[in-house]
Structures are given as C-alpha cells and as structure tokens.
Image (cartoon, rainbow, N blue to C red; front, side, top):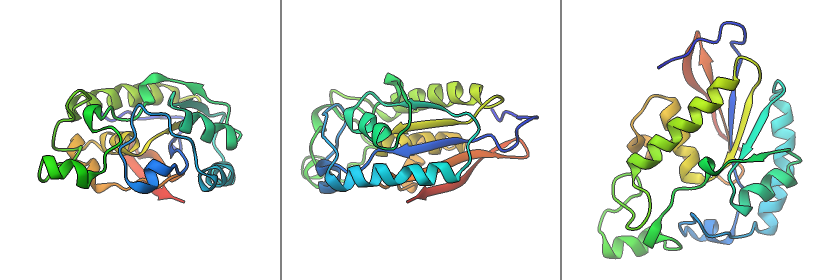
Length: 198
C-alpha cells in the first residue's frame, strides 16, 4: 500500500550494499558466512561516505545487517549504524559458498529468485522479511530519512518490494559492492528514485 508523506515529499530510504569481498568477487553465494572486506572493499566503503553526504539526508536512522562485511562497511564509511538481524543476507542453506554455475551443475536453470535453497530461505520468506524491513523503515520517514546497509540479494529484494513487484523481479535489479539505491516517493507513490549508484 502506498503511503503519502504529506510534510516530507523528499523522504528517502537509502539502500547501501557492503563493500567488495573475495567471495563476492568470485560470485560465491555469501549468506551467513562472515567474509572480510578486501582492500578494495575497504576503499569503497571509505569513499561511499562522500556519496551519502551528497544526498543531504535529514537526520537519518542507520540500520545495518549483523554480518561483519556490512558492519565494517558502516564503520569505514563513518556511519553510526544499529545492527538489525532482519537486514541479513538471504540464507542460502546448502548452497552457501557455491557459485551459480556450481549449483546449476546440480539443478539446471537454478536462480535464487525461482528455486529453493535447501536448508535455507525460499523467495517467499525473503519477500516477507523485506516487507517487514520496509514497513519499519517507512514508519520513520515522516521524521527522518533511513539508511539500510546490507547485501546484494537482500538489497535487491528491498528495491523490488518497494516498487510493488513480486520478489522474482529482483532478478532485474543489479546491486554492486557499495552501490547505493535511493527509494522515495513521487506524489505519494513509492518510486525507485535512483539505482545502483557507485
């Protein structure tokens, strides 16, 4: 349901993906595993602060995934973030650490958006979690902007659900390491104001 924000039409949710890790660079699915940022990932995280500042956010509430790569991204960016478990990456279950090619050798045509992750989360569970995160974030918007620091797939789920699309359409949104997507409104209707800025 679209929420009209009468006093702050510029209210925004900023979705920030963590910086580069070795597993991300290799295309390995990284859910629960704590993989450190690479040196490039640390540089990306330091540089992202200038892009956040350029948005001129209003007294933002900053929430962060509990995974170390997200927490470290917040720290390197100088963002005072509160950890929230709901922002954790998709739980890939038995596919943790595998690449899509490795998974497809077992399950042809597999994608996280269309197939289950045995022992992990399915798309419906991630969709429900994304909706909870967005409801909580949106509740802050009459008073302040919100920054959500997280991961690739779950960030794409947030963007997709903000746009009112079914979770499977997350496949249509890229999210680069330290990419920023801004979610906002136009005349009270949710919109993706800018996407995957890096």
